[in-house]
Image (cartoon, rainbow, N blue to C red; front, top):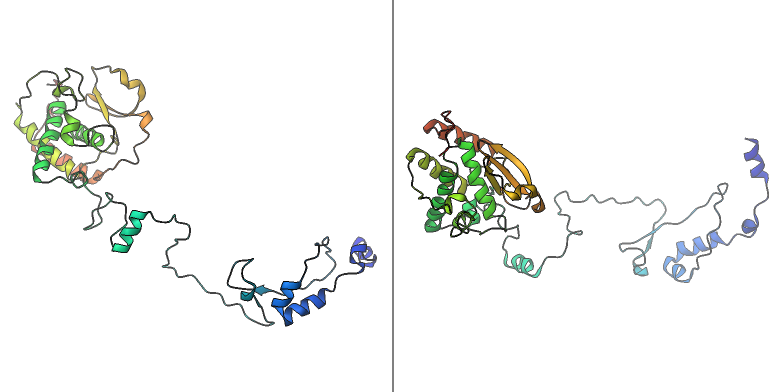
Length: 310
């Protein structure tokens, strides 16, 4: 390349005419690296010269740059670097926030610091609604009865999955933080306000009499399975509201429509987000198996093809 040859023959630039005694400085570092590092002054970096060959010495230490000078050592000529591979089982903790005082106490006492309420301690399965609510025998029986009453009086004429959907809405309300945090409290909230309660059957001034024993037995089984965490309808998801097709509630404009089955359409308020922070339970496979079992035992009016809704 003629231009390259011409550049190589050109005299050095003024800043390179009298270069600093780089070789003397390097030798001083090699002999007494610590003293030389303390006394050395760093000259202003000259413009890069691609046609000069430069050398340097490498110094290393166990601390970060700017650390204690006594920890700096010279890399001896011919020395091989020692590469230490990280332990694959080591937990990455450097980027984690320091534990809170309560968690630190748990660590010292040997207690688990896993988020409470997520899994069952015995076998690491998802906690059921009954476990999350810490129901004892008495409160469990009361919760099952209230939930079964909601399923029966609100949806006994529906297909089995429509009845399960009502139970799921009740439990979604219990865990939403927006309604009473007990099953009976959520079902019978505002029951003394005529036609202004949460579930119409509770405040319509009609006698709540069980006249379909087969559907009552189904409602009780759905309530029990729901509290045991065996029922979850993905299409209903975290819905907290529903209405029948003959009702036009004013709150629908604020809702996201989730699902429609039978006479009911299910919703969740848009302002409440997707409910990802609210617990869920059960699997579609469990739900499908139970649905088939209950549909074999008895038929609701919808499943028999009867359009009448009681």
